[in-house]
Length: 188
Length: 172
Image (cartoon, rainbow over all chains, first blue to last red; front, side, top):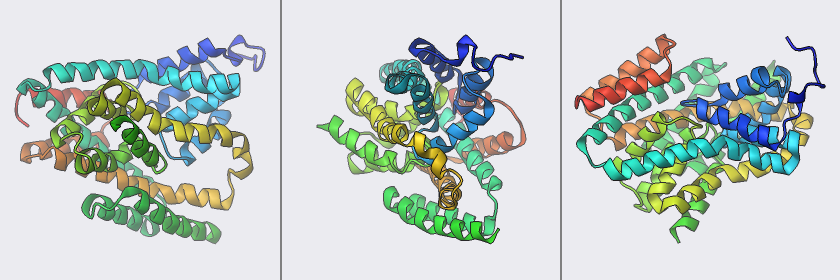
């Protein structure tokens, strides 16, 4: 649609635009807002191209932590330096944080009622199912399953069954499964 | 000081949060319920449910836990602990990302992390089931959700609404 690639007023958002843009992302998603971040950045406001988005997302997904918060830091820094790197994630989190705290206060007031407990139990059951489904889908997307899925099984055994501390399990697991991945990459 | 302790415990966890806050459920449960007895199983499950039903990034379950442990200061400390360490790191690293993106060791770590993240998410699901002490009816809902979610493209919000209704009816 647009032919202007760098002359567009949208191409360099100021702090206010960063805050509002990421606020809209934070408030629009349920169960993960990354797809909404992509839509806002690439399609609606055109702050970056799809290629730029994928390249920047790389490090955000490479590092641990909430990917979308990492992405807000990256986009904020890119357009407004350190101030942007603070304003963008704050914009992303402020709205949802206020809502969630409001819900927490309602919970504190009415959480003891059997009705509330029933509703939350029902949502927890569904949420649990959504997590199993997510794990299944991610597992199905893995290549070289016979080399890598054993690591999934080991993590489940260590964390869910043996209840070993996660930092140790993850560091040991990453060393082992990273070594296998390094070896498999050399075979291609 | 509970708030400081909460901040330090969660900041440590943020370094292994591959798969986001969801992957941290088992470890947060260990810290908050088993080690420090700040919350009980029922409250922990309820907070997870509230986070599921609210809009916004998944990381907000951490905010809720912080709130129940130590009020507003706890909520902010827990959220900051989860976001700040990696935010600082990514701020410092992003300009150098191009120079190591695509290197063999970088790809190996990315490939190697995902089976571990899957294991963490699976463990998170079993943890919720255990903490909530699901009976057969709840397990039936879990199974139905898994099947329906894998076979249809229904928005997750429909599942949440259905779960709330079933729970309201007292069936679960």
